[in-house]
Amino acid sequence: MINVLIYNENLHEQHSEKVRSVYPQGIHGCLRSFLESDDICVKTVTLDSVNDITDELLDKTDVIIWWGHMGHAQVPDEVAARVQAAVLKGMGAIFLHSGHHSKPFRLLMGTSCNLSWREDGDFERVWVAKPTHPIAKGVKRYIFSEHEETYAEPFDVPEPDVTVFIGGFEGGEVFRSGLCYRRGAGKIFYFQPGHETFPIYYNPDVQTVIKNAVYWAKPDCRLEKLDAPQVKKPGKDGE
Ligand code: ZN
Image (tube, rainbow, N blue to C red; front, side):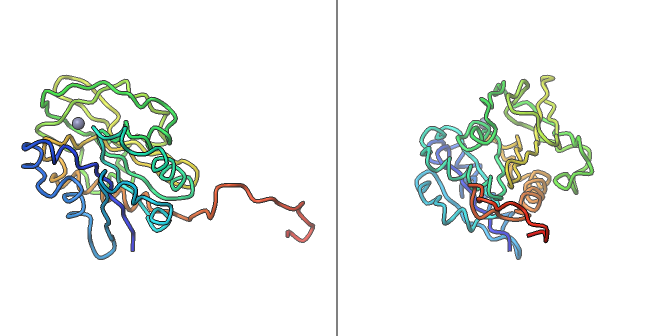
């Protein structure tokens, strides 16, 4: 069983009729609906309950999925630090769309994570740049979204281990849309699609990618703690 924790700030859904009409159960509710299965157990947290993200909960979480935008600053620094520490110990993390500016993602990347953007409802093709990668399994040449917020380079993140997807927009902009990282014992995937006013998370290809990313990011092993144990000088017997 893979334990997935979905954090969605759930603010746009409360403030905007348009977003509520796209995601009546909240973005977290939509993500839950296609992830929950015989081998994936989902728990959700919103900004209202963000302090529920304790070390104890993170110890039991295999993969955290993060959707945030207008409420990034309201996430307590302690919570972001806990998420960062849990990733370093082995927890997987998937940051969606505007999660590029979330506190835990910026902590894990160590850069501004700034990008260029405009909101004109362009179409987007998310091109598969690495068809052999497990996160791209089942996706054809590209994922098409009729309308998406335009995210564009430069994207101020460290050079990824793998660029699985590259987005191309109607206006000609390009963006590294699907990026894999390792930090400590944990795996991180950033995935760009998912502006709140468009029904992106209902797209079966987008759902496939997020599901694949959960299986990819689940821990290989978990470190008990981050501080290095004191070691003895090695003996001849290999002890
Ligand atoms: Zn957006």
